[in-house]
Length: 145
Image (cartoon, rainbow, N blue to C red; front, side, top):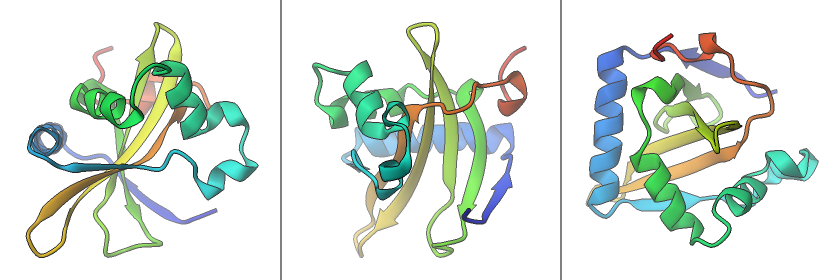
């Protein structure tokens, strides 16, 4: 299993991150979404990005749907921040958990980076799939209990 360094950001840091994410998405940030990933080859189909996006947003362009969903993330849905030790020069990834249709738990992991000499912002959506393990209240540091 890949090594990961996990931390919980302050409420202010998470609010700032969400605000910056929304700003970037509203102002032309490119959304890069891996519909099919190598890791999915050995995973139950239900827990893949492709299955989840097709099930939740069947009649929509996946990029349009994901952009809308990322714009609606809240501090209550924040789980943790992860340093990718395989790519230490890349920005940290943020993990969120969102509930759809009142019961379907979706795990979301994103990375926002400035790329290129002109500071083009790209949002990488690494994970947007049904949660493999049920969410528990302690996974969400800023969720009102």
